[in-house]
Length: 482
Image (cartoon, rainbow, N blue to C red; front, side, top):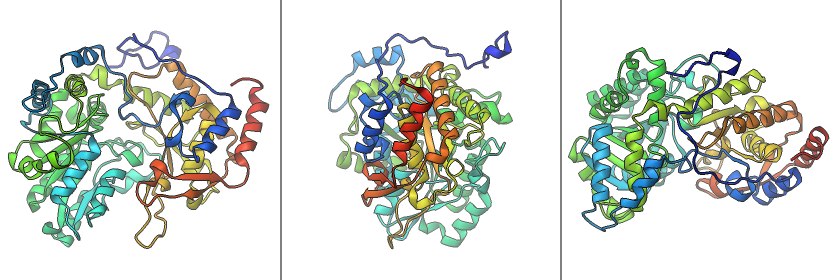
């Protein structure tokens, strides 16, 4: 339960932890920020961390670890085989999910590769509520095709629906029938949906998906990377879950899904990745790919100290006081921005606040990449690094035509246990300034476009000189302030 303040005007999210180690930050002058973003090809992935004040690119692998996680790293067993560290990870998986069959991988996308190698064949289909970039890339690389079946309400930027990541169950059943179960490699539920605002999926919907999969004999797969946020939303938004413990929710899901995988860079606040299942048949089908692509079956390419931190982090993912901090800080930022009139995805989801760039720069067409342009502008305005989650994050069709994103979003991720409330308010303030000066934001065009996962290392340049005009306006409004 959130802590209620006596004076309502003081009501803010209250951290249930204290900070004991700090890292110095730098905030460059605005002219230097302009230079850095242009040197980075207007790609926030290519900025250097030393040039960033608030790194809101991702919550993957950059969360603050607890004192118990740091302490656990000192007892790591780095044996190549038969490692006690791996046994402790398996014990944590057993406690959290109730499953005993565990395959390690070096991170979530490595688990996606193993799943794809085991089950995707040319001409097959993988059904999802919504795709994630790396999951889709591994499937299409092997000749498969991704079909997105999120309920249409999930693509409406602002609603009061608490579970906008839900599958359209009628479409799921219809699609399996039309394609034929033998043509479906697996059905993947992402909880919550990364590319449409971190929106959660209800327990009721996920269980219904597994019922349909079992009816047709199709594999069901849960991407649990963001599950701790999703569990928070279940506990606070879904009546059925209100009186369930967090562990009961995890176990209920694991009892129904055939396969669960996750990135421990998110779930568990450490590093690495895991595939787990009740039925040994599934892990046996994937096992051979672990030593081929990752490492031996007791470390899977992970560094053992990170595995120890993962084990502790998994136990902590059952603690509502730990898992609530991210969603509550995100909700606070979303409310601040919404009160300012900034178009944001509502209700607040997991991962971070998501700026709706189609409304911030409505005159910019998709092929001038509005979400990327807003991201570059925000770095200039405040030294804040977000992540483009729009058309740049898509991949071109086989004929070379551009696939336009359903939503043009700039994600401001909220790494857990990292930022203070004053920094969150600074972020809101700089986004508000950018919103008030949105008429200055122009488009971008490619100077270097990779064929796969272009958002990671592609480069763009401004169309015209709008970024220089933005710097000039900043100086007019802020004087000699940074």
